[in-house]
Length: 165
Image (cartoon, rainbow, N blue to C red; front, top):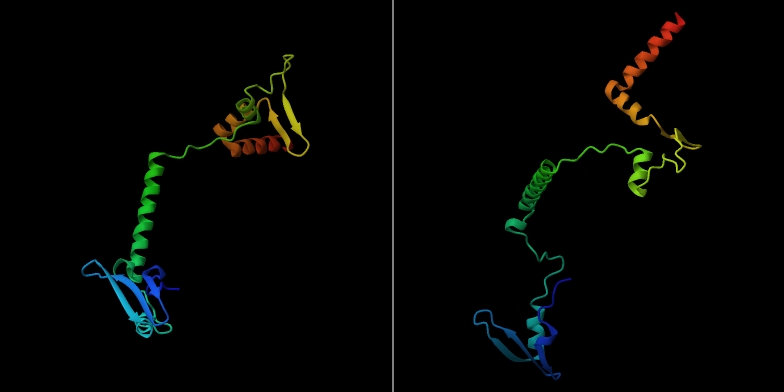
């Protein structure tokens, strides 16, 4: 819905025969008071009502449809470049999954494996998740990283062939 041609606060007085209203002259910038008959006021007001389905806002310049598409492409390119600069400035560090022991030490500042009675805990096993912690887990992870899982599987296959043959 469009704005009205004249705001209500600009109508000073109405007495069923005449309307007293004011407007600001664009050329001089001064206030102009008008006292007009009701029918003349309505005629001046109705002139500002557009025909049905009349498109009021035309888009020109930067706001035109073709320019808007071009500007969207430029803005998207700019955002992409800013994102890449941020990535280059602050590269993402590769996060290593923390073990159960590391998470507990970080949270509670206490080693869960170290018992008060100086016992050594070797395995923590859960019914749903299986082995949660194994004492040699760090060593196994280092071995897998150094040699890879495929090397372990090849070694296993060789040992099976020797045992079978």
